[in-house]
Image 1 (cartoon, rainbow, N blue to C red):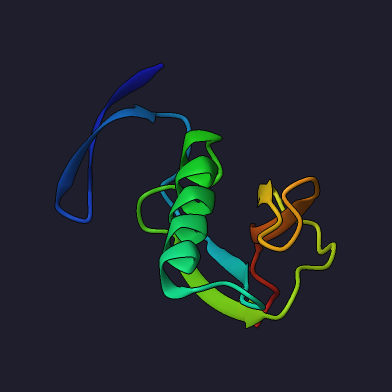
Image 2: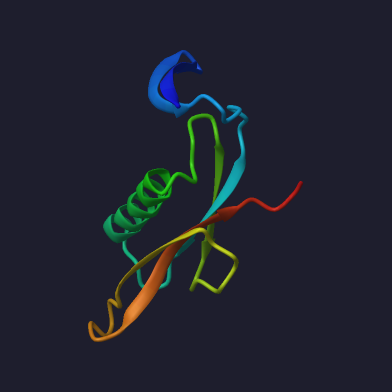
Length: 103
């Protein structure tokens, strides 16, 4: 069942009433080697939007951003893959969202 809930002062429609609105931590890892500012922002925006649409990120969740030259496999729930800037015949992983490691 879905309804409208008040989350951090904002009305959010479509929130499952059975899910407790508890903030979770997520790590967004972005590959920066050979990526300009505009490309960085596009990849970051796409991977965060996809994680929201897939139902992983919710209002109130915490995000931390980590920069690495290239992405490695890390148990991500969402990955942004696009044509490689150096070789358009190859794909490259540019950004990923994964659960934040415990503190």
